[in-house]
Amino acid sequence: MARGRARRSNDYGQFWPAFVDVLSTLLLVVTLLMSIFMIAQYFAAQEVSGKDSALKRLTRQISELTSMLSLEKGKSQTSQDELASLQASLASLKAENEKLTGTGLGADERAKAAEGQVAALSSDLESQKNISKEALSKVDLLNQQLLALRRQIAALSDALDVSQKKTIDSDKTIKDLGARLNTALAQQVQELKRYRSDFFGRLRALLKDRKDIRVVGDRFVFESEVLFPSGSATLTPEGTAAMDQIADAILELQKEIPSDIDWALQINGHTDARPISNPQFPSNWELSTARASSVVKYLVTRGVPPERLVAAGYGEFQPIDAGGSEDAFQKNRRIELKLTNR
Image (cartoon, rainbow, N blue to C red; front, side, top):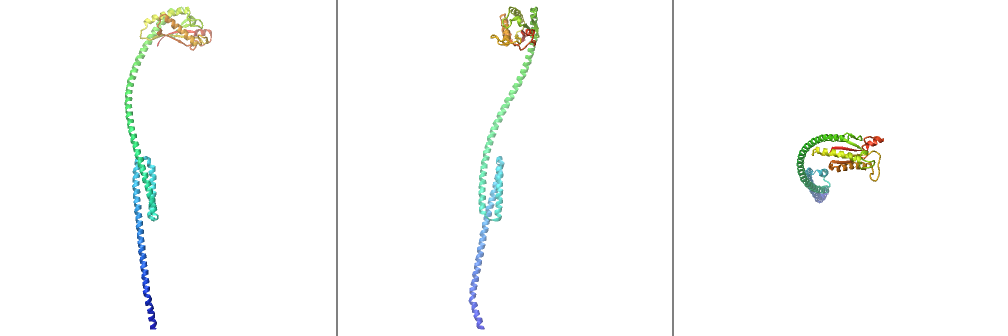
């Protein structure tokens, strides 16, 4: 029995060192694995920390860009819509950055994408700055043009004021002259009425035995048959005798009328409504005008100044009697004498 125990003791003595070596080796392996795991955890933590720093840097850059965009927004009104879009993009980037910070997965790719978007935003910001500079230069040019325009308007306003003052003075002068002229004309009209009454009084005295001559208003009316043959513009001997008396009355009246009264004796020719058409007188216009001209020309031969005579033809368009009888036609065929002012 003692031999058996000694044998077992020798067996254990042979295996124990090997067992201890195995355990030591396992312990060393476990320790090494733990060290490697801790080192790996350390490097992973460092990598995550570096990514956090990059994200913070990007966030800070985004904040700076947001401030710059806010300033540019105040300078250029036209870029407000684009800045709002950029701010929305920045907000989405911030959300993605927060997601990257929470998860830590795919941080490198997203950080690169964020950097690309930041670069794009920086480029847009530079373009907005250029646009703002161009807008400011245009505003300066417009301000200069507006200043020049205001100066021109001021000069025109001054000129207009001077013109208005001159116009007011001219209006006063014109009103004064108009009042004086009206007064003078009224006086001349009154004087001419008096001389017309004298002239008509003399003609009435000279032609008192003529039943075919009458006064209508302010006109002496001669029936055409007294002065002209039918359809003719040549004065008859009886007509020239009547015109001699009128010429004498005019010459006597001319001596009495003051030189400052601009008077004239108007000779008006009229026909009846029956049309006339021949090579000499194509219509009643020509016949009535020719008869008035014949009277004027004869009075000139009798010494009446031609500048005091007026010839006018009215044709059949101003009848005394609108009837269609022979008596109405005879009244409408006439020569009228009217003393008037020019």
